Length: 94
Image (cartoon, rainbow, N blue to C red; front, side):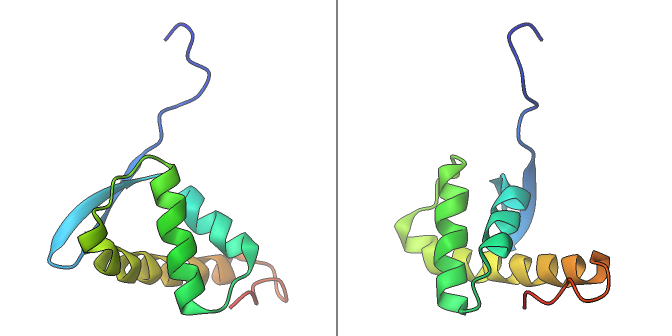
C-alpha cells in the first residue's frame, strides 16, 4: 500500500466479563508493562488499561473493572510464557 510504513496493529480477542472483546495492541501493552517490572496487581492493572487505551481501544468507564481483571489475567499468561522462553536466570520478573 503506497504511503504505508507499518502494518496495522492486530486485535486480540480476550474474554472480558461474560463477553469477548478485541483489543488492539495487547501484545505491545503486555510487553511494555512487563519490561517496566511492576509487581503490584493494582499498578499492573492500571498500567495495562492505560496502555490499551493509548492504542485507541475504547473502554467504557462502567466496564473498566472487568477489563482490568481480564488484562491482568492475560498479563499473567504473558509472564508465564516469557519466563518459559527466557534463558535460565533471566525469567524472574514475577
